[in-house]
Image (cartoon, rainbow, N blue to C red; front, side):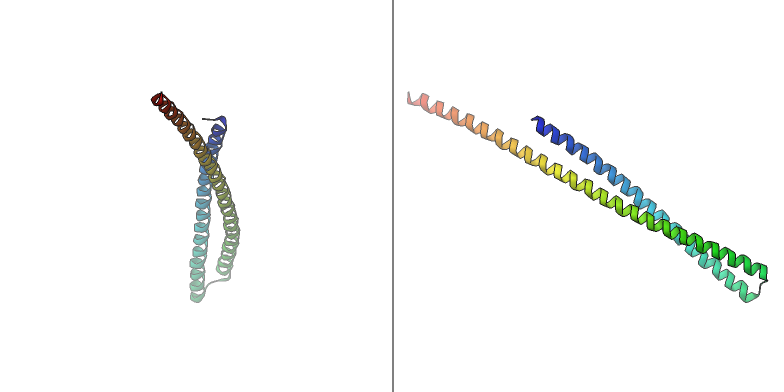
Length: 148
């Protein structure tokens, strides 16, 4: 095996490692994005439930202190939802970036793999040509012996 082929094999192995790492990282990013979305859904659901309780309490009659407490808490939930929406968007951007990185590493690995396959095919053709040449030489020698 030529040193050139060894170099390609080393690059291919390194590229496989990079793809594996990018795949692992992308999995982490996807899981993180999902967790952020679940938290946002929980906050929105909790706000909806709390708002329903507030509306029911308002229908049943409540004092100004209770009104302020409900209103204040709903405002805090709205703020938390807004912040979580920003976190979800940031997480989506990171995931998209991770997907691009994974595709880049995968394409790079495919290129090294194609190069390795071409190199192997070229070495096989060279080997077959040498064997054919040796076989032809042997046949010529046999033919000459028989004619003598």
